[in-house]
Image (cartoon, rainbow, N blue to C red):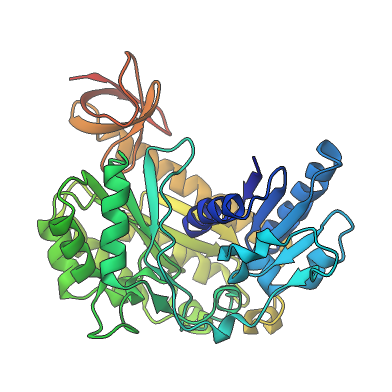
Length: 415
């Protein structure tokens, strides 16, 4: 049995299961595989800390490092005496990368040019340890070059999994007993542009739900609002199995900051998108990624981002203090003092906590279908966390009446 340590996004979580499968196919046993994230310097620091801890706890185990940080800065991990092998994002999904592990002539660093990768195939992951929710990769990479983002250099350019393969994998996961699937990717709404006929994310969602009727719930991981097309809007409006929870790549609420980030949307676009979704699905929960302290951000610019939370009606925030990544244009821009960045991030998180509490309090008295993830805990369609009493089968979807709420979760009982 190999140990997997995963950092970062849902796509990484999905790929860790693929890595587990490939390593098992290769006959690798007893290794520690660290799947890293490169989105912030803090993520890289945490992965290095985890590697050192793993070596202390299991001094005889082989340690393999892979993921986005291994792809973008392999020398960082190769310099660590605790690391036995560094594997790139393409190579980590190949059985051969683990089959010959330990042979004397094996390259210690196996990281190739990610930009040369032109296609993405389904990984056909059949299990997700300890989860009732399955991830399904439909897209990888990104064609955009936001000035703060290192991820395209870790993931390559955008490429999509063919629609038939996505449907086949969704069917297999549903047959395995997963009641909910989350579609994942780096730039999810770019799905299909590189495929014959250029199918869209909305078309994929509708076809998947039509051809896999046994699937109870479908979620989207993160979307770019300006890439939503009419097919996606129809899916949001008409597909009840598409859960009313959408997480947006917003990053900022000030137009000049957005321009300097090289984003493709304006403040008004985010507000308009959220208003339209709410008109179609009144029970929706809207989340967003926000960056605090982007270079050149003034107090007034930050206040625009803070105000956006109310104006767009955002309830679930992922807040990132700006972290300069070597090789990105933003790293060369005038930086904000660390203390100011930290303070702005704290204010965004505080605001997010308040908005989440408001949303949860509005659920009291309602009946929601709760997916039971473990004893006493589950999620509503809007992804709100729920505590409940009583025994329910893990994986069951149970109608529950919401009787109370804390600032972070709902309190419910079976309806």
